[in-house]
Image (cartoon, rainbow, N blue to C red):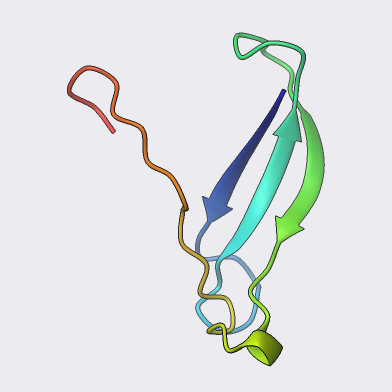
Length: 64
């Protein structure tokens, strides 16, 4: 199982955002293994440098 999150205010150029990935056997595991940067924006494809956004938001009860 993997979790990918958007990290903001990093040292990445532009808007400072990137996707980072962790991996674990179960969602409830305490020690997830850091897998590194999963994706960065590519200005060569018209993307804003460092301008990634979270692609999915899940609502659980009344929280996002």
